[in-house]
Image (spheres, rainbow, N blue to C red):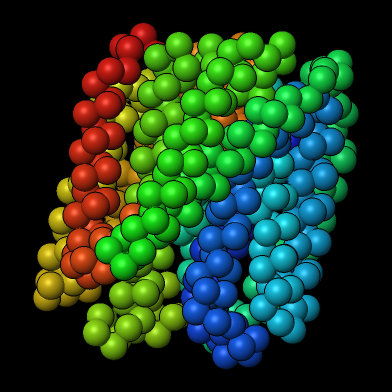
Length: 446
């Protein structure tokens, strides 16, 4: 690996560690933030949802930005915006400032995530490509898993604002590392300017936002059915129009030909199910563990319970390419998704009185199960595309994974209302079983 390629890889991994941790660290800090900023109940919810919704809506544009302007420049801009959003949150004195900062962070992540993945994918030599993507994914997933512990620790010892101030030096370090490379190393050369597909963009945003709003309204379906039916009808109409527009567009925002490739579709679906599982698990375990009706733990203790998950995520994400080479990609993906279902049962038994040792085992197995398919899904999807399509392809992959996370949060809220945390675990187990079934369709030659 050349020095410049190493700068791209490790700068991108550092940035993804910070972005991943930030998305879940806020969950441990929200009770303190609510008291200090006088947040309403809706404000607490949208402190999480504004990030996910904006990211899901704009991440395809981030992928196109990497193709059009080069992955290095797009990555630097995205990371700079993320740092600015962090400063706004850290200095916030009211709910509006908090939500604005979170929305800006979501927009920044929508640019930085696909752009850094495209930079890593296109700068690595072919024989190192799978390992480089595995490292990028591993650091992102590690950030997701340690976020609650980081958030709880910093909130307890220094205050919640330090969570966001600490993003600034990390973003500056990642930007400095990327700035040491040249545009050719980080992505080849930027593509020529093409007419923007604004109609497709508006329809895509409408589809994703209305879908997320509809899912979040599901717990209120009986009291206000229109709040559920309306967004889903709008999402269906937007999808219909999007398919028609993108089929005829000269330079479509979403290249529908990607979906004719089985490897791309399988990578998309399994990666989304993995994100669905990890986001719902991290959020609702923390809520359950820190409640009086649950385990009655502090934020620090609840975060510590997730350490086995963190260890398994990092170890298995980094070794997933070697595992796939040994037993085959299809078997690795199928086994990982099956482990998610098994781990859900183990965690459920531990919370029903099985003890903390069983809980630790369950989280370790869950981490192993999540790491393997989520690390390999981007590789599977991008391997079906040409290198010139890496930016747009990674944007679509990440849009679906962010949307999968949003669906996990929304679906988990409904499950929690129906049957508490055990119902959330059942939902996650079902996602694992669906993913294992889908893995059977992966080509043996993938």
